Length: 105
Image 1: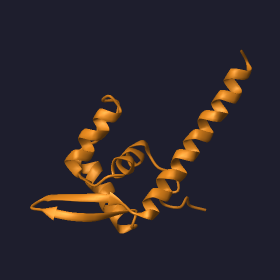
Image 2 (image 1 turned 30 degrees about the horizontal axis):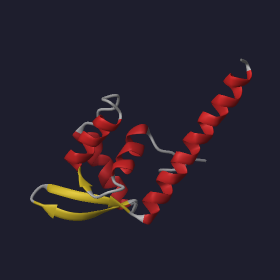
Image 3 (image 1 turned 90 degrees about the vertical axis):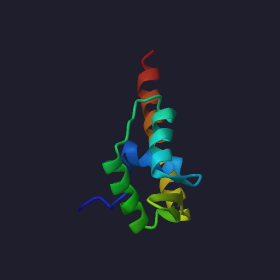
């Protein structure tokens, strides 16, 4: 049985949605991700705009305004739920790590 789309997120997906808590455009998203992750994740425009398009199609984000070629987006309620679910999944993984590796000490 195939995995449902966006049931789990890649790192890039997670950070894009995290940045869209507040309205911003693609260029701002790329800069924020680089800043938030101290350069650990650098997102190229091809990946970013492909994912933004998919997120809009799935109603995870909504386009809020267009100024020339510059488009701004923000999370929808569905997007907030997906981001929260992914955060909880990551936390559970970290908790499992703590349980297994901290018990040995």
